[in-house]
Length: 292
Ligand code: ADP
Ligand code: MG
Image (cartoon, rainbow, N blue to C red; front, side, top):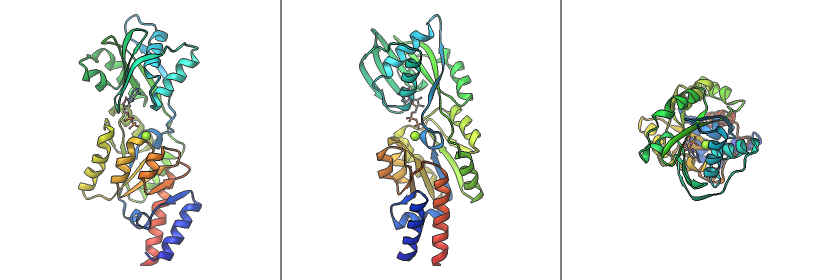
């Protein structure tokens, strides 16, 4: 494209709240045939709330919540914030923890009130040989509702399941419909479990979901789609999305997301709405049409 048409396109984007970092991004966006969307914070608002507490055996729900909230105290994950807020709402005193450790994409562990507490995905518990069978049916039921189940183990034994739910952003479904109408395939990419991913995907009309993808494998998922011969756009908000944003043909960062994601992306959607991706691709198509 000519420098003039690029300038016009970039200016139009800026007025629509879409910051395009390079001429190349504006020139490439019209070729995208696949757009990959991170789930948490991209399709959903990213401010989950605690919805369920399901202890096993005779453990009191409040006791389970106190132990879990204690273990999550030093975590910066959105799930941890939801659990802390839930404990505060119940008026519970959350003890300080020692020996805190977080396992990216899996969960956390810490000692709370003298008890070894593990909180996270099923694979976190399974990794240390804890049998999650007792927790599986509650987790399956909660995830079928689109909630994210969080498993807890205390002193090496399963202790219960908590659920955290996030709401889909108001205009996510409309943006996904618009992408489909433009002939663009939409894929969800998330570290969350398969069932939750499938429930949210169904809610917004996405036909393909790649779930339980560890942060370090998100970029590989993009390269896998490119190896199928696709031109891939990626939209994300988190630190763990940065390598995938960089690997994509065009990376789009949610403007309300982390600085790391914004720096790794080619385009920033200031309002955080997915409709910005639709506008950006349309703008690129118009720009490239004008110069041919
Ligand atoms: P996403 O791709 O949706 O942003 P992450 O890669 O951050 O998800 O996390 C993947 C999964 O790991 C979560 O759905 C959750 O099951 C588990 N997990 C990660 N961090 C925590 C935490 N601090 N507490 C509980 N579970 C966690
Ligand atoms: Mg995210």
